[in-house]
Image (spheres, rainbow, N blue to C red):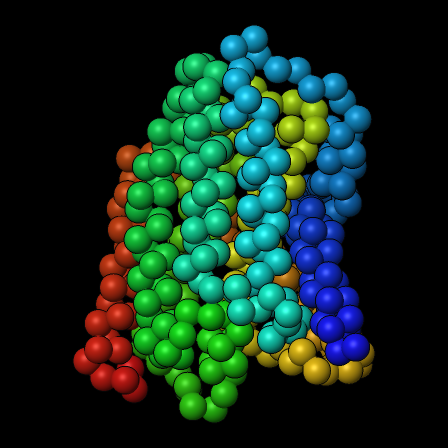
Length: 318
């Protein structure tokens, strides 16, 4: 009988990330508009956009293959699974044993691979530009992410997220230089993976600068809705990852009661609000950099992650 509550809590987490992802995107847009002294759209506007796209007819290019049709569903499914594995308000859930950082990176890499292939499938110039830039960014962001994972694994002796969150929430950690470097590296990787400023501007469609939008330019209808929802889930994934690793407060266990789950859910909402406001402030205060400067930006994340690993090898207290 104990299996039924575990299934319900796991299902609640999967539903939570799916429902909260568009809300986080809408909150970031609203906060950016307020910082720019504009009224801005409602925080619920992403939900309306998704419903509008779901009602529209799908228009496919004449030379589109089965890969172009299947990619939106593959990208959405892999991203949703990866986002649902990251602890939000509770740890030690039924499928937490699969919440391995390397597995999550592999799922996101699979989604990126299929999306890049779909951008090349139609043969348009915009799709080719977007796919090539996406792969270039991935070759620099993934090694930096692996350095982040190695640093956390050396600290917690595990790559499992629940174990890492429980260890970092204990009193045995304290302030460490390596964790500060890893936090900055993870933030840089998150900006690159989600095509946010200064890597890319999600609010524009300029052919000389866009990365993610160039790959999905040929999509419409429910296919575009799946891709947009997957992009919102990916942003929520990285925000939840930063919150669960570097702010693992009020992450309840799998045997907690309803009151503990409610408190954990409220604290998780505060974490999302704080991270969304910080992202809006960063995007408002900075400008998009040139594409040729992106390798230097991501190279800094790689060096920070590598220095974090080396510091732990030199001294376990750093």
